[in-house]
Length: 201
Length: 201
DNA sequence: TAATATACTCGTAAGTTTCTCGTAAGTATT
DNA sequence: AATACTTACGAGAAACTTACGAGTATATTA
Image 1 (cartoon, rainbow over the protein chains, first blue to last red):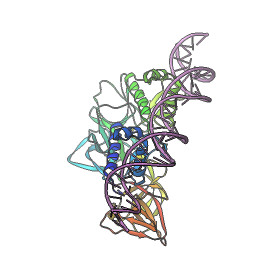
Image 2: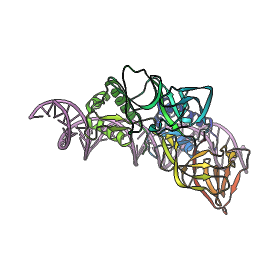
Image 3: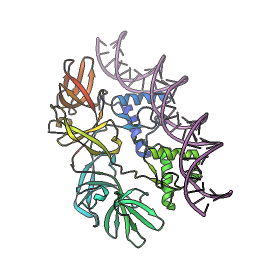
Image 4: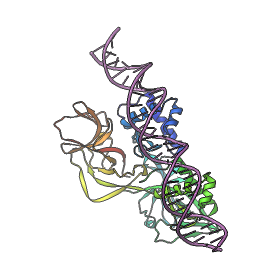
């Protein structure tokens, strides 16, 4: 970016990026120190100060935040994910013939993620309207409380997922709508977990 | 206060999630305590309080409810930032009447951040086109090399900021375009630092 | 070649925030 | 009343980050 990076600074940044990616949180100063072979925290601090000053790093929790290092800038290269199909409540998911793709915020770039476009107004109960896009992480399982894309007897739906001892409860994201009980007899499959939705402006 | 989780807090949340998933109901404080190796209920309570406060947990049965811990929709929570106005090169920033707001990637949720929409094609030199949105952190100062939203004699611009001994240099993000020299006589104000830009789909 | 930045390193001593312990008391259930 | 939990508080250890002072290489400039 600004003053271009020296090789050692690159190395530093690369380490932070990798670590964050792998562990879900940023490294501590001490971890950086031993990973990069420094023998003083001061050195780590020097890098952080320099890189922050030049706009490559940021401390997401304000000063004194622990494990708060976050990369910024990076080239704003907007990531693209495949747009796999159209989803409408109560219908099967409609696949698209030619694989389009759409720009998404970089943090969501991941090989297991894909995008669906919402069709019709039948999902307003989930605060999701016609034309909206949802970013989905492909998975067969979900944690309780996550918003999932699921098929019940072939019909698509978008709900919060609550497994119960003898079946599954699906809550719409709008409390005014009824809870759906899925029994053992129903053909129920989770297609993925919704990470994010964005709207066409 | 969208504080992010520390590793230990993650671990706590993960345990609650797993337990709930497997047993159909939430763990009691004591179960959490022994599972996570604490030797005091106070510790469990500390986590519950902290995580509840930060919006990761909820007590579904109100206060004093037993085994009432429930996770709150972790991934989705689409952050929204206010869309403060339109920016076009060479014009003042145009404020919007009704405060709209737009979905942004969660990491950018911060009270000091806001969004501007780019108008016209006069900023292509910065790789930013008509209709794009930029996320800006409100600040009067900037570090050398950061991309800033600035006003020069009332006219908006988007450039890399390089303070010099006797004035300021503004570099467009595209090296094919000329550098702007701001002198002491110019009326120069930084409005904020650009963190991110995203495009209309 | 000498002078001078620039990039980096070390050690150590604070300073903050996160996490833990213990103990005590409050609330619902049976 | 006994049982099974949740809530509250104070004190402090642990885990991390910041600040400072000084020193060594490696390039840039004069």
